[in-house]
Image (cartoon, rainbow, N blue to C red; front, side):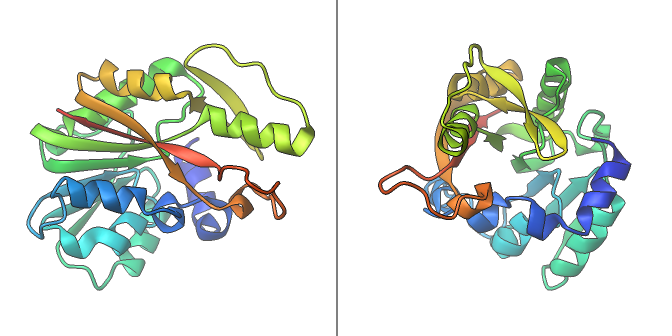
Amino acid sequence: MTEKDWDQLAAVYESEVCDIFVRDRRQVIAGWLEDGGLLDDDRSVLDVGCGIGSFFKKYGSRFGEKLGADHSQKMLGIASRICRRQNAIEWKQADVKALPAEMSGKGELVVCSNVITFVSLPDCWKAMTGVARCARKGGWVMLVQPALESHDRVARLEKWHAPVRRGDSAVVQRDDRRQRFFSETGAGELAKSAGLKSVEVRKVWYPWIDEGITSPLRGEELPWDWLVTGRR
């Protein structure tokens, strides 16, 4: 997607995009941050592809220095308004595939949620490398990636047939956009491709309604994204 595409999406972001920081039904992200001791009020954090600032709105008061970067100036304007009560947030317009050198090594935690979804796999690798470089040595990177297994499971429920998938990722059609979704293995390998260590992949569940399903079968697992964490 181009800067113009993201600017157009900005106005309807809250209603049309599944914002995992808001929709995390089982508080998996909060649990990981707490368990890792990352919410101690003075750690620096970068959110690359920050959108309308949902991560900062929910967790920003628990961090020190904060930087939110996004390709869309309109997204940044909304984020600045939503997070106006937060202290010490710097907002920066930047393309995740060409992050400026001054962002390198700045974050004890670097967040990147549902951004590295490019149709081009080399673009995904390039973006992943840039995001990883934003972390300090020994710092953490926290990614959220769309789950291919969850997407295909939802497709089975909606259409009563299962797409046949092979490999670590696949490009899928989501409304009017094409995005790359990752398998559990593929999400982990993406992080490792940028040199991250201690990589772990876990599910972050969100409500059925975010997939347009109002009456799921009883006992069906909630849809999910992948939470991918690793250390630089």
